[in-house]
Image 1 (cartoon, rainbow, N blue to C red):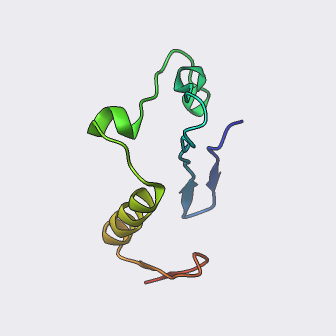
Image 2 (image 1 turned 180 degrees about the vertical axis):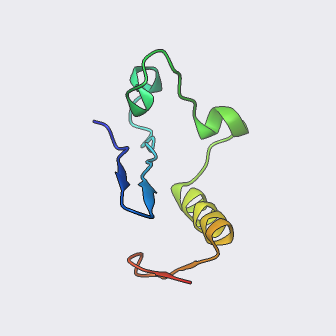
Length: 84
């Protein structure tokens, strides 16, 4: 399943991305993932890059804060709207 979709209008380009969370039930096989349909490219894991496990709540909060800082917006708790 490809979770990346690019939608273009006259003045806005939207890019989606996704995280695959390891539930700890079986080994996560990221070697089978083809990023954005690009053959012969590898993906990595946050655990490998940071050298530690992360809780999804930690990832969500840091991603939210970084997104707000970069795009100068506030993401509301209902996760449906951005306030500039």
